[in-house]
Image (cartoon, rainbow, N blue to C red; front, side, top):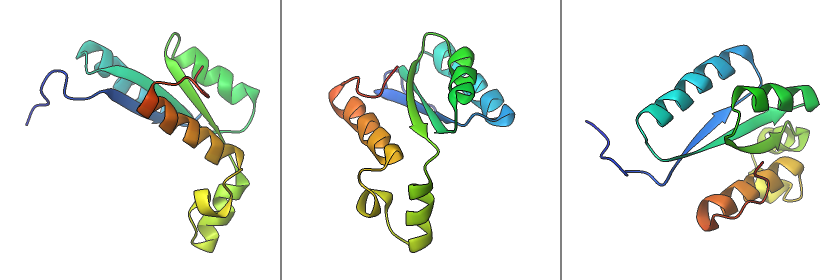
Length: 113
């Protein structure tokens, strides 16, 4: 089955600051551009420090980038069997994901670099 042209509003590419994740994500981003699949939004997930952000920014120059920090409150919620949004709504990762959702729904640029 082939996706029809204009079949998506956006392609959300989630990437972590690891070598393998970066390799796979840069290939996927290339295909998104090559096939003109739609606007690309890169989610830099589980960032631990400024070096992680630099790696991802360098790997995706000029792309929209949403940053989600590595957040122990998300892990804690998971271990409790709770949704992070319910267990820790003010957690930095949860706020970042809410910003991503707002951007996708309304086109707002909160949290987007």
